[in-house]
Image (cartoon, rainbow, N blue to C red; front, top):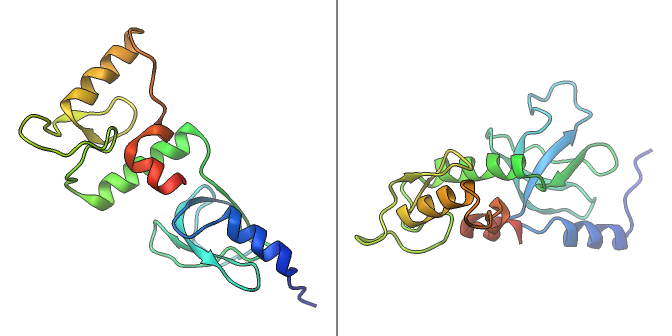
Length: 153
């Protein structure tokens, strides 16, 4: 018999998985799914049955079933790198630097390849990453990047 979660649990799930946050698949009890464990997607909300509605990066929209499947919000640096690379690919030519968020203009061109992810960043941020790697500046974590802050909040 299928047991539905209480209203309190559904509300907690909605707080923990707001629409727009990024999630990673931990397990799925579906022998026919082609979703890979570790695959990422964008949460579209939580329904009244506690299912987490996800648009997976691979194109699937299979939900994470409450009490059966498991997922989590992105946390680790490697998960954030995957998200950064997916966002960069999805957005094509950005009008702002993904790292600092400043507009791409003649004096701030997006010409540097980040040392943290396969993402093009502005020349200034490229210089800062070189200084960070040389130990002359504090390393900025991926979660502090402008375009990742938007999906992590």
